[in-house]
Length: 529
Image (cartoon, rainbow, N blue to C red; front, side, top):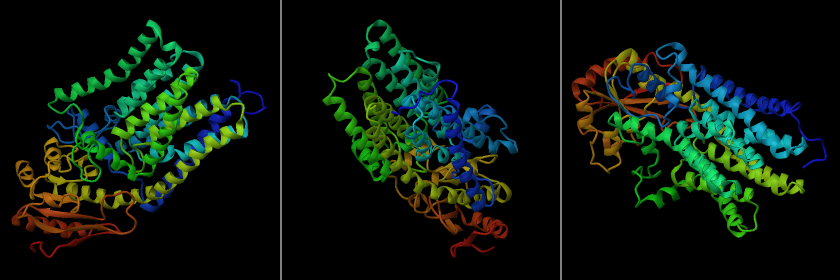
């Protein structure tokens, strides 16, 4: 796409350095702004602490968030195991940030490798795509979130680079195989990308014959068997094959009903309220039309690229999620955009102006969308520090007894007391009841069975879970922008009048220790000591 000399091994380092500088600058900006607004280091999501809590239990010989009780609160099969170092210590809290920074660096380097091999020559178009890609696709924002998604993006890019090499040389590289293996282990959605590799092999001429079929079988086994073993591991613990958190996220976005064959269409259509879902569907529709219209005349490598785009993208539209700092869809957007770049640079290599326009358009669109999301990211860190951290502090420093919550995270980390998760990520029973359109007061027996006398809930999330005899103590209230947190108010309930009296005394002491920006407002229903 340029008259300049092709990139050789001696000068491939410059694109890698440029890509790395771009993402680290954005990541550093996110961190600095978030730290400034929150007044301390904090993640923009308290979901990080779910994984940290599970890691604690793994080190202790269990699996879940409560000692002696198995549960599958983490969506990622592998990530909690990666967080086991430093469990129980002060450094444990920073381990997700360190791992995500490493994943971000790996993603920047893999993106540079992929783009330079697409363009072949260091024209100005390549430099634009090299910088716009990681920024527009929000690599830095996903890494700052502290979850497993940055690692998942890196695994997806490894697959992308591997597909590129395979289409050029017919070789299955270690990079491709590692991405096929670790993608699904980091996120179940990674199966779509891993199986798309098998489709690439089938749709190319090298995918025919015994050698081709053995490659296909090997790729399928590499992607499916490790995840299947994890599902067997869960069942051996007496749990469902799929983690509770995965089942909860497969639910209807509006009603939160469990995913069934009867509501599958409704669940899929509800995702189109999200802008990325519309963009992804539009791109896949065009790719499908090109694929079907030119199937016989199209070179095998183009069939393979388009087929992989449609297969993996459709899989995410059907079973994947969108939103919440856009961490759920970044891997598939990266995969689809990457394959699109590969397709365009191959097909329109002799027409650089057309190729550049086709490539930069979706990158600019994604950059605009994710920039809006990242405005929420900095404020989210403040909210986690002001809300979830303060909830955990009340349990740890004042109450020191079992508690029920609907937003599992900070409260469960480094907390020796029982945490009942009424949303169901850490409780299969609560998840099943919540998704079955239960009668009012459905949480009453759950709290009684677990000797829980305090519930801290978003009232509008679980209003029908509240027992008729519960005493509303008051609300933990934060001011300012909410970021992506569920609610500005967390309502505290006591299950009995006697518990309300004791809790009122504790909350009076606790309220005097709250930082600026958060307060506890007592309810008139609360029993005065």
